[in-house]
Image (cartoon, rainbow over all chains, first blue to last red; front, side, top):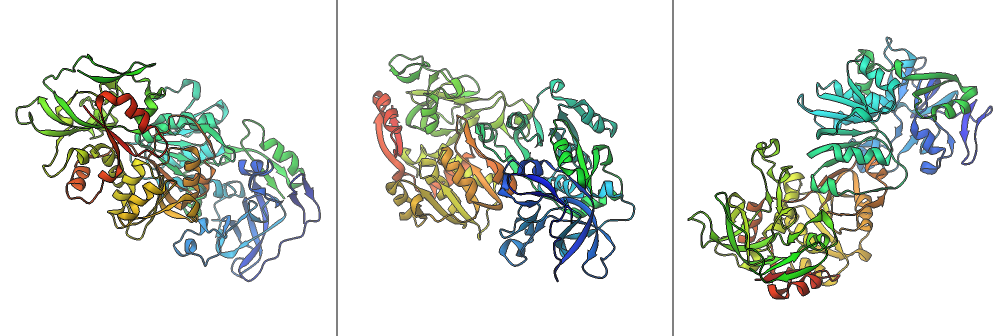
Length: 316
Length: 316
């Protein structure tokens, strides 16, 4: 099959990559659309030491697997848990220490014609959802993860720092709680997407620092993290949504002095994300920068790495 | 009065420092015993930019104030709140943005013959408590603060990293919950204090890293913080108990990947600390390194700064 392969030094389209095999517990999925995430770009800089087919955002059609799924459109959760350890036993399969992760850790990814995934990881895509919407399920689930971890009240003042893809999804997901959400970023084009949806969004230069109940750090930069720490009110909550692979130089003294709770937040639950997409309470298609054919995947990934780029998709 | 004064460049005994004045809302306290804290040592290195009489741990006798308090032994909470702002209104006076803090921010400290404090900050010392015990109320309250912020279960595995004064108090306070507490440090002498109390305590070199439900960082070092982050199980809790004034260089990626909750923890409630001291469920006198007369305060502070030193006290 055709697949975008990273061998640790070269990232290229392999026209004859071995098609993954499905077994009793897994399904083979023909990828209809895949999304490029910042994590993919970090992996190409060495993060996780991953080698193989990149990609963990996808929507596809089951071609091998249980009869009732074959021919159906699905999205796949990306953490492949062992199902037998203590973490799995308490429902924390996403934290299984023996997990493989699609396109990130020990499992091939979605930048290919086909991808294999444990059948239990698959979720059917409702008919009313286009591929262009369903492909956002994984990053949107990551945004919904915040709501699993932090209890928000109507009266809470929430700040989302960063107007990247994840920031735009987080701002929308958090707004569903009724909390007062503001998003702060650097790109007028992206902030305009939120404004159109009725969400307060403003450039960093116009933002007047004041203490917020909950701050979501989604800039992925050390400077953003510092602004985020300073923006949390005493006893407030800071959600770390960006995985920053490198070391920061920063002081955690304000976290102690102001008794801030910092919540690391990673992958999230697919069902609420699919439901929100299905009932159109979250708008994702304005986040699409461009759709590339898989054959132009190397260029697509370069495009996704441009400052200010929104979601770049690959169609095999 | 005699007082240990820090003018920003020199730390010395002033034999004729102005005695603070009590007003309608505050009391004047003759200091019976004061404790030297790591924060005092940090202030002498520039932390907080404080100038004046150092010291925020004390037990004393009221000499001016409400009639029912005069002649009584008291300890004083160190955050002097405005009582009128939003934080004060919701019971977070310890986070009042206009607060003064005894010996740390805008208010004279306890390394002196007399100290003034808002009368509402004072707590009577029960008769059964010696001065040598009561002087630990403030740091012990900081240890009890963890129990206000984190819910511990019997089955929780708790690790306290650092065998300094605060670590030894935290290990004892957390043990009261029934959780399985281990303390890890570098000083056999200090670890022995916990062992004598039946608390598992071992040198870092003997500690075998494994995921803990709750980790308390009380080393005050960047290396300790890194060990602490790595010791927390996925979805577990890291309590930051040390105020580190300087920048660290570290990666917060494990916080995100393992979805750790980091809780900054500072000053705590005095009543449970006084109660625990009164009913002897916490042992503090083994933590006393030496008691110096106030006149030898400069030497005492130098002694407190020695690696491995326990609690150094000053008697005016």
